[in-house]
Length: 378
Image 1 (spheres, one colour):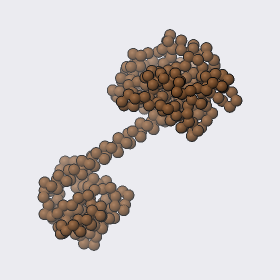
Image 2 (image 1 turned 45 degrees about the vertical axis):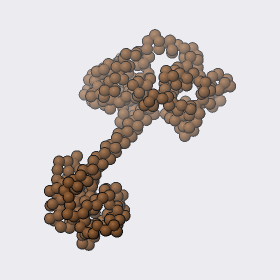
Image 3 (image 1 turned 90 degrees about the vertical axis):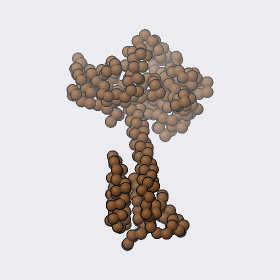
Image 4 (image 1 turned 135 degrees about the vertical axis):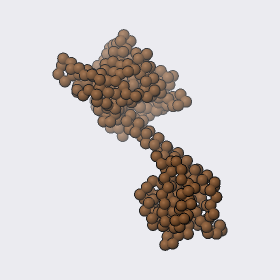
C-alpha cells in the first residue's frame, strides 16, 4: 500500500514544487492550502508524515501542530516544519514545543528533503510491520486459547516453580475450583500420592518435574489423587516440558484424566506401548479455529490429508480452519493450525456418525514438519 504524505502550504506554487521533489513510487501526496483543510484531511486519512508550512493566514503551522497533538488519531504523526522565518532559536524551540520532529528552512535543499522524508517513511513502514506482528501474535494466542479451552481433557500449565499459569474449563471442573482460584496457586497441594489424602505431592522432588526439566515427557505409573469435596478422585497424569528459545526449562503442560484405579493407569501405559498409533488417534481431537468447537476425532493422518470420525456431515469441497493440540511438544510447538478441504464423506452404520476425508490446503512448513514427526514417532 502507498504511504500518505500530507503537504501543507498556502501558496500553490510551493505545493507544486514539493510535489515535483517528493513524487515517487509507493507515495501518495495529499495537498492542503490551509490549516483547517490540513486538520480535516489528517482526521480522514492515515498519514505517515506531514510537511507543514509555518507562515499561513488564519491558522499558522504552530497552531495546526498543537491541535494535531491534542487529537488521539493525529498526535503521533511526525511533523516536519517548512519555514522561511528567522532561524533564531526561539522560533525553532517553539516548533519543537508544538510537536515538530524536524525543521527545514527555505529555500529547501532537495537532497536533504528527500533524505529526511525517506527516514520517516521507513520508520512508518517498520511501525506498521510491528503492528501487524502484534495483531498476528494476538490472533494466534486467542486461537490457541480457544483450542485449549475447548479441549475435553483437563489441561494445566505451570511455571518452573510449580505455580499454575493456565487452566482450561475442564481442569476447573475436575478440581472443583474456578480459574481465578487456580491461577497463581502451587500445583503440588492439589495432588496427593495416596487415596487417604495424607501424602501430599511435593513439586521439588516430583518425578514429573524432574523428567520435564530433563526434557522428557512423563506419565504416572500409579494413580495420583485430587480432592473432590469430601472424596478423592484417582487421576491419570501426563506432562511435557515448556522451554524458551534458548532451550531453558520454563514450565510444564499437564493433562489430568480420571482413572478408576491403578490398574487402569498401568493398562493404559501397556496399551500405549502395544499400539501407540491407535492410542495417539484416540487422544487427538480436531477443532474449528474460528469457533473453538470440536469437529471430530482423528482416525488417520498423512502429509497430504487425514480422516476424522465426526457426528455431523460436512459438504464436499467445504474448507475449514482447523487446529489440534499435540500429545507432546514437537518442533517447539504444542498446537498446530491448518486449513483443510472436505474431499469425501461416508455414513457409518450408526445414525449420525460419519467418516470424513480431508485434504490439507497450503500448510506451513513447520506444520508439515510436525505431521511428519508425528508419523515417525507413532
